[in-house]
Length: 117
Image (cartoon, rainbow, N blue to C red; front, side):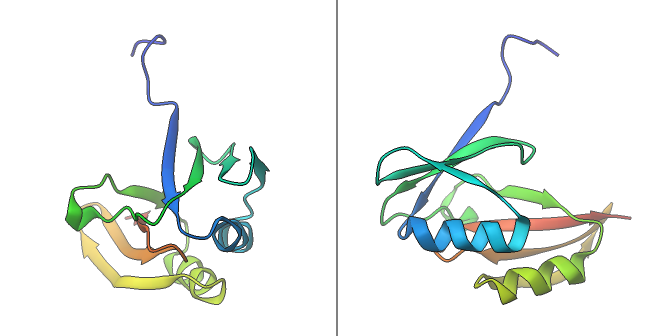
């Protein structure tokens, strides 16, 4: 693997930055650094990134990349997501290599969470 070229950062849209920050802080313990009123960044989550204020949303069925989280306990992660204001788009299902489910954040961006085995 080249140390010169690698995926380093991801940026996602958010209709409501405060709602997204509250959701990810509650569900996953993320911390944010604001850069003005239209951008907030997160770090140390496996991949650094940020949310920019926009009325758009990232959804895999529209051709957007799908950000996938790894979890040791899918049911517990799913419960935290619901409790913190996320919505389940696809319930837990099996696939070769594990299980996963899809969810949306308060801005409607789609993500997946998977577990090995």
